[in-house]
Length: 286
Image (cartoon, rainbow, N blue to C red; front, side, top):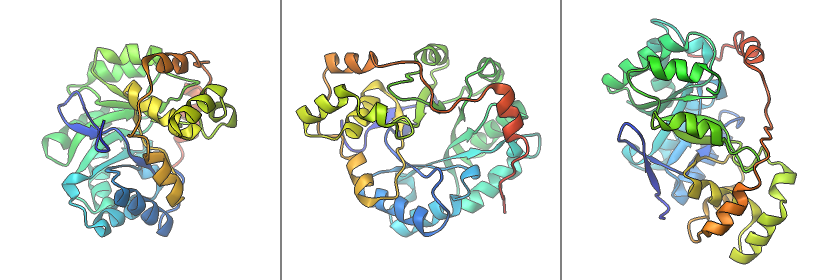
């Protein structure tokens, strides 16, 4: 597996399996520097969102990098306030402006609340117009997942959810298989859980392969077929996180890590709680 490891999506597009995430990194110098560092190291996938409020900095880093835009995969997400008939199309145009790009490689619906069906319909139209290459969803785990997939003319290419060795989302994988939808992982190392990172199995494997426990976890994700984008602003951590392409875990070792699944989430919110939390937040959209 090379550093430019690609996975084919259900629409035929090839997505870099490894990227960098910018969730909770402030807009401005920190985001620009983190993205530029990752790009300089060879990372070619950036995951941002309207709600993160740092799309402009992502766009600036891509432009400043000097790397051909077509060699970089940009993912962004529409917030709940971006959903709706004649609303989503305008929101996509504003997103293109903030990212300073002619197209978005992957556009996701960020949450499973609000007018998501109308938003999906307009996202499909954006693909036809060439504004977006692939479309997907994020945090769709309720029955609304099937509702949207059955409604969709273009099936979601990915579903971005909490996914790590303590919460491996095996049931969700089964539900998505019929649509050809792949899983992307936020919290790939369990929100930095010391209990997870310090699992004796990861320590043992780290010693064997001369890697850190975090690198072992990230390598497991790749071999499971998960798409990941660990977040960091520390140049050394960005470099270390990406240094996972020179070894392979054995089938037996992969199976042992699968045995760590506890069904434990680090973020818990019911659908009704999500409805209440998300409906009043409106990120700046100029």
